[in-house]
Image 1 (cartoon, helix red, strand yellow):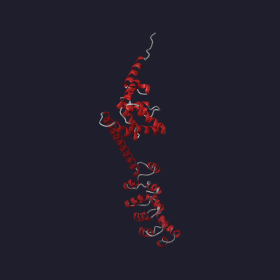
Image 2 (cartoon, rainbow, N blue to C red; image 1 turned 90 degrees about the vertical axis):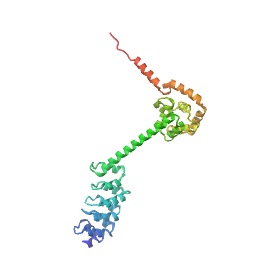
Image 3 (cartoon, rainbow, N blue to C red; image 1 turned 180 degrees about the vertical axis):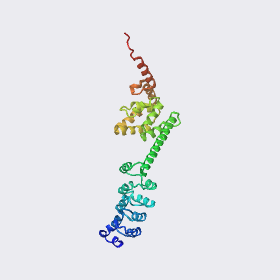
Image 4 (cartoon, rainbow, N blue to C red; image 1 turned 60 degrees about the vertical axis):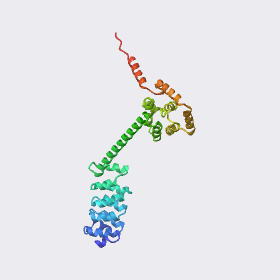
Length: 301
């Protein structure tokens, strides 16, 4: 049987796949020197012990590795699993075979990640007791927690920067440039609202309104330099698809307005309130009073 198993693949294949006479030692010896076709035949046996699979993993090509990984009767030492996972990094078919193995150790499963979205969906369908399902769930939870922590940290840093600008510890240009270049419109709107004494939501809308007049007034009145304002214009241009000529005109409009004139205009802007799309606290209180006065009472008969 050993001689048959070492013959050409047409002769050897039935013996390699089915002969119970071939021992583990015989198969290891054959697999150590035989062709890939011979290794593929060995990989398809009903049972393959750890010593044989180790040789298959060492010598096998992608086809052999996929076949032995798919074989639920094949036993793997932890070291062979790790080596197989390493070879599977650039081969989706081997990865697809590995994710179905219930005996995949945790270390090898961790080394197998990350996977394609398609393979992740296949893993999810395997059931909660699968090692990879549990690892994916743990990793997803960790990633969500990490993103949430980063968002909290970024939010706190932004709030601290805005507080420093309001208290004159930091130049407004530094904060404007940081927020505008990072396209952090919410933070930029909050900054301009805080230094101007206006509602944040309304100021955020002004950042991308068709008319830049109120935005020019807010920035100029609070000492934003032309260089920092250009960063805001660049941010507006990305969203509103503003061309070069329009940008130049906007820069000229900003340069033409004096800080003193801007401060006077800001006071007018506050008084105008909702006429500019801005609702101050005074506007809101007045509306509430008017709404209460206009509540109809039931007429008596």
